[in-house]
Image (cartoon, rainbow, N blue to C red; front, side, top):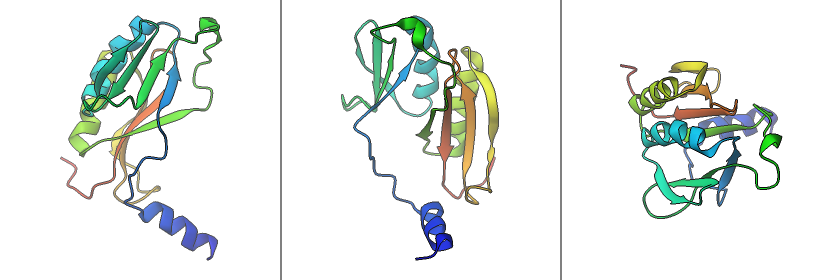
Amino acid sequence: MSENEINKGAFDSRDFSAIFDHVSIGVRNIETATAFYRPCLAALGLEVVMDKGFAVAFGNGSGRQWLWVSEPIEDPNSVAPNNGAHFAFLAKDRASVRDFYEAAMNNGGRDAGAPGLRPEYIPTYYGAFVLDPDGNKIEAVCRNDEPDS
């Protein structure tokens, strides 16, 4: 299989099955982070499913913990802003991507790429990129072929 065939398969894939059990995003202050993440992730259908005080887990309402937002247990000052990590969340449609972005901008996030098509990825890739209050880069993405209204 040539490199172009491998890349085409990756970009054309519509397999959105999970490969992670869960992921964690490190933050310096859980209250600030929760105030940011709760409305951003609600725009994508995720809600708080567990709160440990120093960490909050988000899921889709089934009780499953997909994403943890957590202060480091060992050293809260060790959180490094935008250390190269990038977390991309699936959005059901482009309106949800825009809602995610608006929630981020209204709750302490910073713009890292306004909602729009990114045809350099695939022709239908519609995403928005933001930095959370700690500088972690997060994204909402919809790959559906739909009108951009």
